Length: 469
Length: 101
Image (tube, chains in turn green, cyan):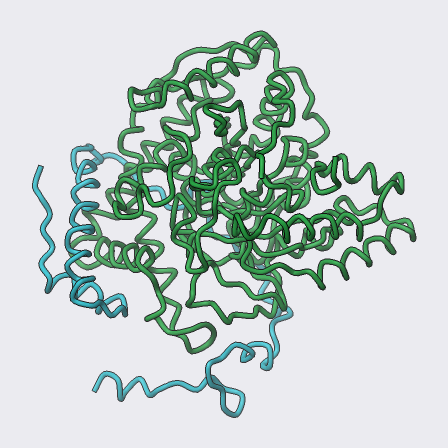
């Protein structure tokens, strides 16, 4: 097994036991990037020199007795997080020359924990997309099948983790942008509760929905990262002053008597039957561990995507209004199709005479969707659904039909509307393509969804199947 | 269900409000695509929300304040580091008045 294939937990053990150095670990990741990047295009910037420098420092710190929780671990950062001195494009040519002078809070925390920033990953421009194809820096391909999309918008982060170009990666999720690519690339993706992780320094998409999370090789690693990123930040007013539990500590708690609800609105006719079958198998294993599974209803589900496609573009149009090419970045003529579409849609739905019919009505229906979840969590502890109605689709298949593309978010956007945390967990392969299962919990119940994910991951035991590149 | 039909004039007006410039073919494409999306979201008009409050802050936080004390911030040099043009420690830009007169 190569070093770049290790999980964070395994790598930390090896580093502590001096089996290899952080420099060797970083070098192996960089070599892997050199080898497979021409096929995948997961990165916009690879930070070879800076990464080796950070790794050297990590080795030195370890010699001096440092126990930092991510000391020497190579992590990729979605190119929508500001990184001091490293180009940050948000996947858009508008920011092709933007060199931030400060780190996003999440990046700062990861660096303080000893992480080595290996590079900045590709994404749909401004995180607008479900396939990665909207990047202004070329599309990313799915490591499992190079003719298919990796899912978006955290396309490069998912592909980089799946192809072992790094040990984990950061992501952002406004309507499914962590969970969908995690599912399509067969990695673990966590979208925490709204406000659990600071968004300071992340290029804003839709401010009432945006969540910062990450993609990892297993559930244990996802918990380790959340331990570092979660918490109050004075620079992001949406982070509550709520204690951060140790997400790793109780992760192996048994799931006996855990009540799991399956919302009937998610197990619909349009759901690929093989995906459904993979979920049935995973759920049977959880049932064997003592979980109690029942059918529930989230009655306003059918309105969720419409609510999402009003609130999100409205807030996009407002957030992207700041790009004037004066203080940083290029002028507005560098916006490409999808950003233009969303800016115009949002400008329309927020304009005088339409605000009440569109944005206000959407925010009211949002209340009903949130209430659906609150009611459901009175009866069950967790909700399980598919992440996507279908397997990773072919490159180019949906690019000319925005509405069809938007439907990719049908099972994921609800968690953002309700502000609840959700985990995307790989549960199997269908036709040699990964399938993801979504575990949703009440607000701030990250510990519980990680416990359930951990138990399920262990029970399924996917035998560490890797894409063949 | 009523069909939304955005006229080319309407599309150009929205683009102008948003500070975007569209080519004639983009206007045509936007007419079709934006109308299609607006038709799709029309489904929300069927929901009775007379007694429903809107949700804007989903975790219920209210009036988040901090101490009225100056914190560390970027230096003038850092602030101007990415400016397209700067002069005497300021961002240089075209006169706003000129633009609208």
